[in-house]
Length: 99
Image (cartoon, rainbow, N blue to C red; front, top):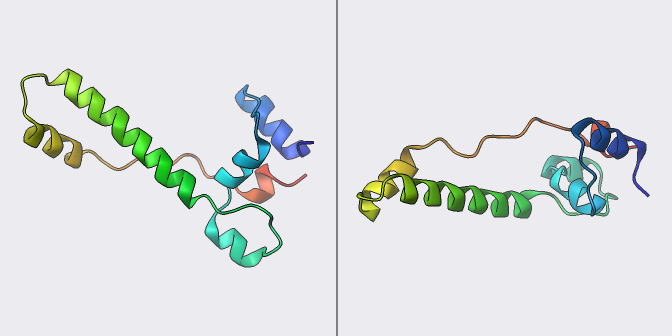
């Protein structure tokens, strides 16, 4: 069963997560685990790695389709000039995962 805080978050954003533990993992920063060793889930860096790869793929496809006459060297330069992935709003465990 989801905690009341997760239910509040879902209601606020209008989306119900199927895997609540995956949501909690996505919100678990490494520093939280340092202070809460009993927390049963891993920290979010592997999910962040996967998300960064997805964003890079979407960006690459966009540049590929938008600039069909440019070669891969120019497209790579365009992609490298873009800022990194935008950080989502910070949500702490105390506000989102605890009930």
